Length: 562
Figure 1 (cartoon, helix red, strand yellow):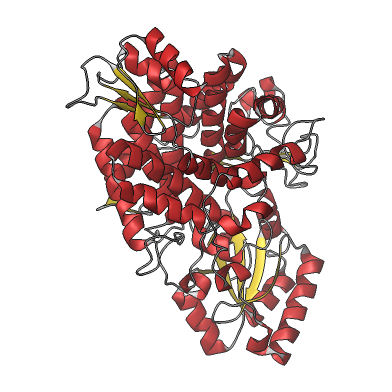
Figure 2 (cartoon, one colour):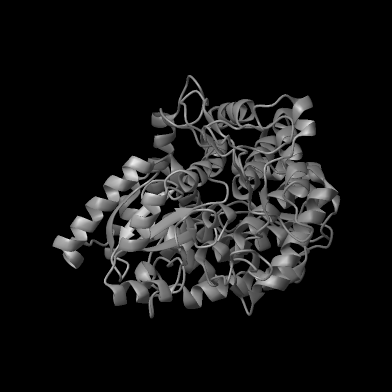
């Protein structure tokens, strides 16, 4: 439990079966407070509402209060989030939802507490509900090119011509949407990256802020998440791949510096950095409002040192992508160190633990076998195989992916969506959830594995995961463009370049720099049909004849893909 929670007057319990058992025995509802170390309004609610003696007394008397760190407990976050953080959620002793809100001040908290007490007294369990995502299977359909077309159409419909980005309200950077647009609506992607650089990048300390409330990228929220920064490094690197423009290389390079300094723990990448918010107004950052000179003398916002498996996988994937296009050895070295940490400390027989709880304040245990961790790590390891040529990364990717295939699908169902983790736990954790975005990430990784290993079972699993949501594709927005990317790569085999030469050779480096970020590069291939020192271009399953120079490779790709 973080310091902010411990300083309140609420008698917080840890998330777990003991808290729900206590609620059942006392016949009291549970109050879940979903918070994050980087969330300024979460800390404000601790300072105001939860530190108010009357509010705290009412909470302690009428509920079993439970504090949840949403980064450390992602399955709880996905089931109980009611629209942002903090989420203030009231549920039955069995964990079913009663009602919820986001931030509440003292007066709002008093009113809600009284309303929930009355609701529980008069209706009890009858007032509970289960979220639709936990009651119904996703709308399965047919995997087809129509999925890509439908989401690509949303790019134009939702693009903000005036300010960049997609949508007409708050602006998130949406790195995966940018990457989808790079191949389909490049001007939109580049315009959005320019807006992100202008408004969300910290020119002094480095790193990108999480989002802006205003359509014009104003009212910036100054927290910096490891996941956001990693994904943006990859997006900017891929923009540089297409354009060769330093405008896109520079932000990626400077963010690599931020990740490998401010967010580097000595072993791995940390989860986030707080916004340095003012006690008087959580929307205002005292630190980031300072001049460069004053910042030099001020203490920077705190970093949450928790090294999450998915964040480190995303960072490694991004840094290896940047290295592939630039030969930046620092990026590669830190990527390999992060992967070594995850594989050594967090992976056991293919099962990934979300983070190492030992030595971390307020962290008793960590879940394992989470879909997000397996998806991002399998993808990062596939990238590592393509960039470094190291076969051990491919072996590890197989183990991580095989665990997901064996453990994260319904029994006997080898063709459907993956669930987000184990099917047990207190509250709503025993109800399976099939998240679209993480299914898409895993499908993308499985597509790479199928092409790198020649094993059709990975492709079949990817197809099943994407088809499981296909009947709702006409309702998807640009926020889930990663789903359309995965669908496109399955419907139209991505470009593959097989290099019968060692990783790091001129031919291998040229293959990595072909202007198609959805391609797959296989270095070090050998055997019958491969001429040492040559490269082969595979398009729609047809392998070209050998080429032996980077120039010939570029010409051959142009011939076969025009």
